[in-house]
Image (tube, rainbow, N blue to C red):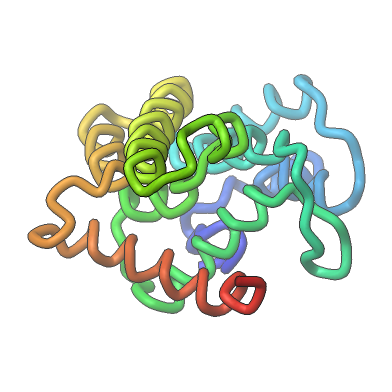
Length: 193
C-alpha cells in the first residue's frame, strides 16, 4: 500500500480519465497545489469505492485545520499531516490491518482543533474529560463521513469503536491503534515536549 493513502494497488481507483481519477483526487490536487473543487469530488466519487471515498473526505475535513506544521518542506494542516503519519506508521507496524483499523488510524484526531484543550479545566480531571469527549466526537464525525461515503454499517461501527478505544486492554486492534499513535508521537512530536 501507498504510505500516504493506505491503499493497496487493487484498492486504487480505476485508471482512465483525468489525473485525479487515477489517484485519490483530493490528495492529487492538494499535492500539486491546485484547488480541489466540488466538481472534482463528484468525478472522483464515480471512480472510488467507499474506503477511498471515506479517506478522501476524512483528509478534506482535516485539511481545514487552521493550525499548520512544517512537513515535506512546506506548511501543511497539522491534523492532515498527523492522519497521514498515522496511516504510514500503521502500514509499517501492521501491513495487513483491517479496513476498520485503517480508517480509525486516519480519523483518530479528526477535526481535533474544534475542541481545544483550553476549553476544559486545566487540571487532571479536565484533561481526562477533554480526552474522552475528543474520542467520542472523533468517532461521531468519522461515522458521519463514513456513512456518507458508503462504508458498510459493520465497518463503520467497528471503526468508531476503535477510535473510542473501547476495550483497549482486550482488543488487539484497539491496542494496535494506541501503539501506532505512541510510535507516531515518539517519531514526530516527542522532541517538542
